[in-house]
Structure formats: C-alpha cells, structure tokens
Image (cartoon, rainbow, N blue to C red; front, side, top):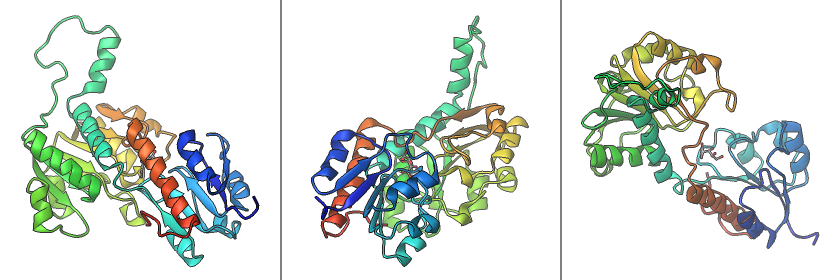
Length: 322
Ligand code: 8YV
C-alpha cells in the first residue's frame, strides 16, 4: 500500500524480528553483503522514511542529503559513533539506539577478554594444538592474577558499571574508574566501592585496565605511547570500546618490549581489517567485535531497534532515543 512508510533494513538479521516491521511498513531488507558501499546505501535509502542499521553503516550528512524523506534512523547498537547526530538533528531525523539490552552480555565478555589475556588462554591453546605440550613446567604460561588485583575502568557507563560489579563481587578486585563525571556515592557503592581517578592516576595504580567508554573524537588515541608508559609494568589492557581509542602501533610496541603483560582487543581502528602490527604482537588476544554477541542479546538488540522504528513510524515516542 502506497501510504505505508518504507523502511530499509540494511542487514537482514533475524527474519522473525524483521517481519514485525512488515505489519506497519514496506520493508526492503538487503542480504548481508548488499550494502557494500556508501553509494549502495545511499541509493537504497533515498526513498525511505526509516532505516534499521547495525554498527557498520555510516550515516553522515552527504547520505542524509540524498534521503529527503528519512524520519528515523534506528541502530541495533549502543554506540552511535557511526551516526552524525548533529546532521540528523539539523534535519529533524530521530535517532534511536539499543542500550541496556546488551550491558550484561558485553560486561561478561570484558571479563572473558581480561581473563584470556592475563591468563594467556589464546597462546596456551595454540601451543597445545600445535603439539608442543610434551612436559609439565613450573612457569608454563604463568600469567597475572585477576582476583584481588586492581582493575581500572575507563568509561563508567552502564557497561563499565556492570564490569565493576563483577570485579568486586566475583573477583574480590579493587575497582578504580575514570569518567567524565564522578558518579554518585550510591552508584560507587553499588559498583563495589569504585573510586574515581584522573586518567594518569588510574593507569599508574591499576594492574588491569579496561576501556568501556563511548567513542568520540576526543577519545581518539586516548591510550597512546605516553599513557601506556604510565601503566604498571606487566599490566593488562582490554578494549571493548572502539578501536580508535587505542594507538595500535604503540600498543604493539608495548607488548613487544614487555612493558605490558598482555592485552585483549575486541575492537579495531580499521575493522574488519586488522592492523598487521597487532597480528605480530605477543600476548595479545584478538576477537572480531563480538562482546555483545550472545544469541539472546543480539536478538534483543534487533528487537529493540525494530520496536524503536515501529514507535516512531506509528507516531509514538521512541523507547530509547539517543
Ligand atoms: C556491535 C557495539 O556493534 O552496540 C555496540 O555499540 O559495538 C556492538 O554491539 C554489534 O555488532 C552491533 O552491530
């Protein structure tokens, strides 16, 4: 029917969830590889009122200029660094995202990376699979302890707080955090007595540092050679935020020269391409941006993105606007 709004689903995830859109809108759902270039996205979005996107589609002013009918952009991510929010606001386009539903799953994975890096799980498994395990030795893959150590969390939003609770309750860790704003004493208490620090102090005092901040231009290379040099010798760095937060060449260097004990990265500056200097660095666990990827959570993210679209297209307030 011509009066029904048209929606582009930039990635056909979970057909049963996308089908909910079809009750209200004309849906153009493209297979996974159809949006291969910004030009393809622009062409497919040009006559649409709504967009369902993931973290991989870039929504910028040039694209929006080609989409005069667009009213709502709904991303199934919590991060919105792929969307030019000012350009959307200037055109009256509502932007919605998917917070909360992925918090606990993502916090779980922060710990998975921290444990894997500090306890050298990746290296140890490769060694075993390569048939190199021929005898017991006292320091075989001897790593750093998690329990009882000091964890520094950079970015104390929903995910950072969920990690702090795990650290304090499950691993008896002392928790430090760095955040734009200091949290209330009640929230600090709920996060295992987490203490606020300036970034240099957090880096200097922590045995393990975990990055969970939203990406912004100010966060670009927040952790570079100078910051890595402030960290304790043998410390661990984990990044589940965005690749651009860490200077990858400086990190590789700090791993090569033994300054850092280990690192774990789920996000990369050029993802899905991975900087070869990282592939060559020792004691580094690398995963392909899967921190939110449990099946129930990925479904909940898609469902929330669909519900946000339905709300706006039916004239209701969105559930989780940016
Ligand atoms: C992934 C994320 O982008 O929500 C975010 O901000 O970084 C992740 O959940 C996910 O793959 C969704 O595309």
